[in-house]
Length: 219
Image (cartoon, rainbow, N blue to C red; front, top):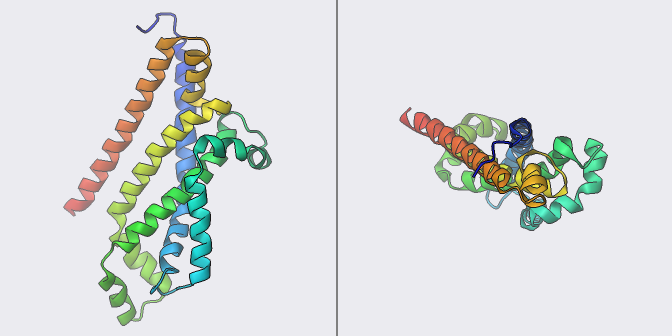
């Protein structure tokens, strides 16, 4: 049961902090991950910028960052987070590890998405004399728009999960409230409320993503 004495102001602030963490982290993850994913695709075998050694090096970095459990990554990146954000606590302290954890994930999604496009698209661009920049901005990305929206939605949902996990080291948001009040103080009503809000956020993001994809597909 939800207690009538629950601090709804605290819950509201924590919800806004989670939205801020997710929003900024998603923005930075896309800004970093999109060009990284495009370059991974273009530097692969048989592509215009084929570079075996550079591709393998970037792939190793991406795979390592994707394979490290996020809770461990949070702890490992505390010195880096303090250097970049000036603190490892609160919303500012949670954003750097969130970006480091999800930008490679988004980059790999982008690479796989571009690999699934019809190879004839690239051949057609080459036949018309398009350079690499024109191929990327006028052909590849427009053709992959719906897939990119789906990848962004998946990344946003992962970020919500990670942002809740960052509460373990005082990252702020709903995860921090759930741990400090729901777990450490045995306030199960707080725990259930934070979980319910996170579920609603995930569902809302998925619905928006599905709506955008359906609108684009109709065109």
